[in-house]
Length: 555
Image (tube, rainbow, N blue to C red; front, side, top):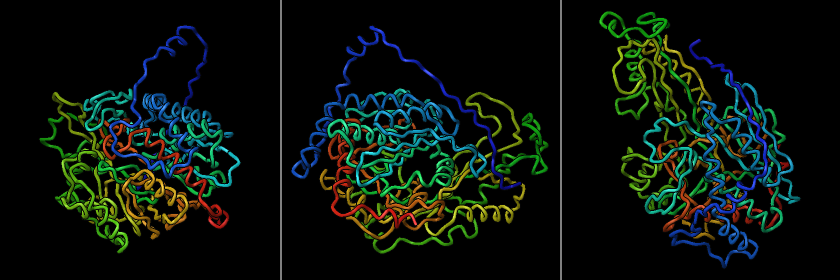
């Protein structure tokens, strides 16, 4: 079958450990050197304490006093690999995350085995927790605990799983590690903030539900099944997500909606083609007299994308796109006026963007589409040296980013039809997963709680807006929970969603991924990020009026 769903087996295992006391260990803990983290770093920005209640000021002081411990919490998490594509460390990581929620005092916590998903792959465990604080409002907090694999370990300045602190101008201390910004750093800042609030206040001002998935980098296939199977477990008044932090220039925006993304593989084989090697790679000398599936695969890819590498040549690919509204363009123009393209490019690790115009770049990032080549493999994959191989099989991995009102599975069908028209009926397409787009209105209590925090922390931000929009620089499974317009409705779980905080990180999915520990200039460090989270939670809990109408949103 050309459009196939892979079925793989996943062996899950848990490791047990026993705790015992010993004098040397206790002595070592007492004498362990302090990290010496400066909670305010070299920041020229600070919260407006005249707008801060006294009990929240005490939380801020607690965070400052315990910032070394909080950074150590993040280092410990970074040291635990959690790579969803390979499964490395996933069972251990799920148990570790459950331990975080237990430490917070959640009365209920559990690691759910979701089983085999509709895409044929076993889903990684979902960690669920519920903290009942007797409060009138309940927030659902979304996490992901999985990370991307290391594709170029030799390019890292520091080992990816040690969580070392290094100087990276203008910051005196950043933490380097896989998952530092995507997404363990922001999530640990959330957890540290909640632990600090509970330590100071005795209990949290809101009830919490945590959903932590281990498949975000695999299109959230396990979380999709979990929400479909257990919609009753994820009902809340609103969702607060870790997604959203400051830009290199110090500004920030709110996140809640999501673009769409469909992930698939294209596979060319000599067996399906009926030419070239059929059962295995063969000696390269025979290329003199035999056809090459590898060169056929390259020609096939070239028939789908224009020479610029940016324009899809698939019939109907750009159909159904809804252009930005006037309000969305006005917001983009306002944001573009404060964008330093050079700084943004450096932060994500590119030489420059396709366009040198900030407005065009922002529009492409938020409302554009793409046909990406994530990787290609087959034949001789050994670096250096020689090796005469004529491959019998070549596989390329792809993701398509799409926007309203496009449909991921419709795009897959259009690609298959284009392959047929181009003479590549033998090429197999293997669907990995699909995350539909989701729009969100930020005219909600959780949205207003975040913009209120931005004002309290003197963080420049676009004015609040009510028109539903995507507002996302990447996909995440917002469609599973959104009460706005979505590309596909999966389960009756609907609520306002928003994310935003202080702090900064960069190089997500790349080598030398980092999270800022000591801030500088207009960018807050980890202590500031934690304080911003505590402020959002506090703002939401103390907003006047009744909670969001959960009953109506669940219909």
